[in-house]
Image (cartoon, rainbow, N blue to C red):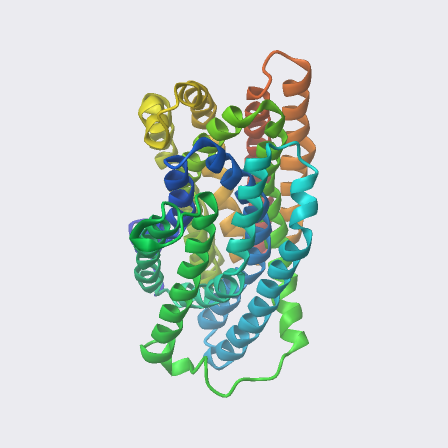
Length: 449
C-alpha cells in the first residue's frame, strides 16, 4: 500500500485491495454454497437438515471469527505508523486466541448440539442430518479460526492476492470431498448431508497448511518470522485484540444470527418452506460477498490512513467504498429479480420448493441497497477502531427492530413466512441509517483533531 493523492488514485487502490478480497470471499463462501447446492441435489430432507445445521453453526463461527478480524486494523495501523517490529507479537497472540476459540466452538457443539436440535419440532430424518453435519463441521473449527487469524495478517499487509490464491484452492477441494462423501463415490461411504460437513472440515485443515507454508516461506511475510521464537501468551495483547474484536464479533453475530433465527423460526412452516428459504438465503449470501469485500477493503485502507494520521484520505476512502457498493447493489437486485426462477431451478427440481423460493428471492432483491450501505460503513468504522457504539446499533437494528417486525408480520398478518423477510429488510435499513450517522460523527471528530 502507498499514499494516494487523488480520487482516481484512491479508486484504483480500492479496486486493487478489494478485487482479490472479493475472489477470496467468494471462494470461501463457495464451501458453504456447495454444501447447500450439492446436498440439495441429494434430497430435500438432507437439504433441510444442512440448512438447520448451518443456521446454528454460521452465526457462532462468524461472531467468534469476527474477534480475529481486529488483527487487520491493528496490523494495518502498526504498518501505517512504521512500527513493524510489533507486528509479529500481535499476530502470534492472535493465533493463540484463534486456537482457544476453535476449541471453545468444538466443545460447545459437542456438548450442546442434542439440546439445541431437541428444542425444535423437526422430522427425525432432518434432525439427524443437522446433528451430524454440525459435529462434522466442528472438527474443522480450530484450523478454520487459525486460518482467519493468518488471513487477517496477510490482508493487513496489503497482500490480498495471496489470500485470494489460497481461498481459490478451497472451493475445488471442498467440491471434490463433497462428491466423495455426500454421494458415496469411489468407494467412500454415502453420508448425504452429513458428508458435506466432513468435506468442509477436511478442506479447512488443508487450507490452513497451505496458508502456514506461504507465510513461513514467502516474502513479505517471511521477514516477520511469525512462526519463530514464539512469545508467551500475553493477556495485555489479548485485551487489545478483544477490546476491538469482541464488538466486531457481536456486530457480525447480530447481523448473521438474525438470518439464522429466521430460518429456525420458519421450521414451523415445514420442510418445503425451510428448503425454499435456504435457497434464497444461500444465493443472496453469495451476492453479499461483494459489499462485504468492499467493507474489508475499507477497513484496511482506512486503518492505514488513520495510522498515518491522514484523516482526510481516510474519509475519502470511507465514502468511496459506500458509493462503489451502492452502484453494484443495483446489479445484484436485477439478478435476483429477473433471474429468480432459473436461480431456484439451479438448486432443485421440486416444483413446490421452486415456486416458494421464487417468491423469497423477490424480497431478497429489495434489501440489496441497505446491505450495500451498511457493510462498507461498518468496514470503515473498524478502520477507525470505532466498534463499541457500532455493535449496539447493530443489535438494536437487527434484534429490536428487524426480528420483532418479522415475527409480528408472520404471526398476525397474512404475510406468514414472507413477514420474516420484510422484517429483515426493516432491520437492514435501520442498520444502514444509524451506522452512516455514526461514521459521519467519527469523521467530524477526526477532522477537529
